[in-house]
Amino acid sequence: MNILYLPGYRYPDSLKEPLTCGDLRYSFNLSRALVQLGHSVTVISRKESEDGEFSELDGVRIFRYKSELRKVFSTSFDISINRFRLFRKLYKEADLIICNSPLSLELSLNIKKPIVYICSGLEDVKNYSFSIGEILGYLGIKLLRDPCKRRTWKIAKYVDTTAEKEDRTLLKWGIPAEKIKTIGPSVELSRYFPQSESMKDTFRKKLGLSDKQKVILSVSRFTPAKGLLETISAFKLLSEKFSDLVLVLIGVRHSHNSSYYDKVISLIQDSGLNDKIRILENVPEAELPSYYSIADFVSVFSKDYDPLPTTIIESMACGAVVVSTYYETRDQMIQNRFNGIYVKERDIPDWADKIGSLIQNPNLPKEIRSHGIQVIQDRFDSLKVAQQYMDLVKS
Image (tube, rainbow, N blue to C red):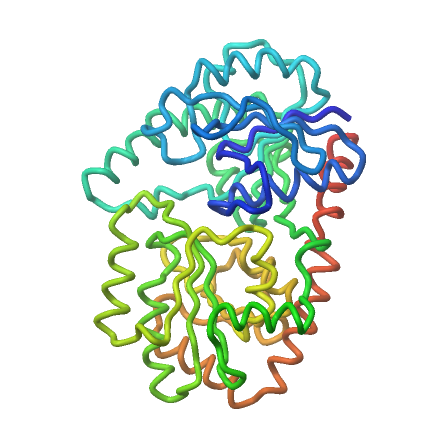
């Protein structure tokens, strides 16, 4: 099958590059799995200054366009004549179109090909505050992106919420029940698995860790919904009781709140934690499995709206214990005390107490790691998830 894929965000040319957000991770994993299943996948991606117009990564063909409004739209949404021209050229050859981002000018075409629209966070505007920049971003979403999204949903054959509990939101917004599907995110298990001891030793040395130090890892964008300020405060509380702990924050500066990174740095300094917290920016995608593998615990201490982060299943695949804020949507990934640990939203003492308890009772983390790996292999293998999409389209 010939598949045309619109991920919205810039698709990487190499595993040496970082992936900037969960939306991109979803489309990256799915597109690669579809190729491994024998399908032809062509991606339409934004072009940065250093990019060529065409490249190929592990069988995925990537055509790039220069976005005229790149600095206006910080999300995956775009209104671009260049994208329209590229889409018009490529879509007629496709048997299927997959979108992780709304069509815009392309909606003027008489598209007869089946479209599967994959949602990732239906109510992300809940995370916007009242700064001037964020108000403008909010208005852009409400006045431009969301109307295009609804029009794309209207012509799509299926709309996939990815988060099972968010199907009610689509129903509330008037999407017919027969269109709504809930196929979740996935992990590329040929890359994401517990790494060898020698590889883990290499990465522990890169971080300057001693044999006794335990690692708490966070992998996210530097943006308020990821709860990094709360994570740092909770880590300070925990480290007062357990001295041999290191918090590693892996991230990219990709946020509607540009000052958030500076707030993270200030809190680390004000808390006197410079020697206990490592910040790694723009980590290559190829290295992430090794960082997950050296983590004793992976913190996903989100707040506000963050329904189904892919870091949860990535870390489980590599054998780490996930400590996650409880959201109803995350029951799709986590069964408390079976393959992960839930904590209350914004509850700093609860986070510290739960991880402290795991440190003092090492048998439970061993069980959680084992169960987590099995859950990923059973339900979140990218090849199995990709096949679900193909079975859906053929049905």
